[in-house]
Image (cartoon, rainbow, N blue to C red; front, top):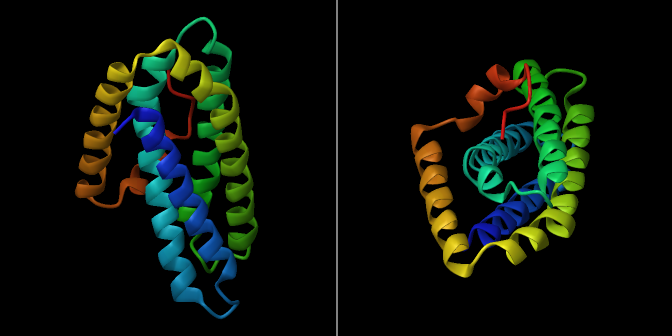
Length: 163
């Protein structure tokens, strides 16, 4: 699968999970816990494949500023996610943190799809995007297969990764 198509597919999956989370009733604690776990795992995998594979391949003069901002946005997302994971669903800040996380993710997705992806599409061949997408898909599958991909997020909140 093309790298950008894969990332956009993941964006839509997380948007749907957030929509499910929002529509769950106030008394749906187990549903919210399950959805929070799925959202956390999906975001952890998505961030890792972008940081390890996509961003280094996308780095060029025209994208460097966007990529710097993107890794900082990942860091902010990971910090909120770490607070959510550490506090759990019983924390009185849980719903507020989930809302902040959703807003951060929506902003990040919008910028990637509007600014970064068009530049990468212009600078990479179809073959390069296919190869990169295949490598990203393999890494994502490996991370999910290991189980609980989000368990490493609290250890990734000190600084933004190098790209």
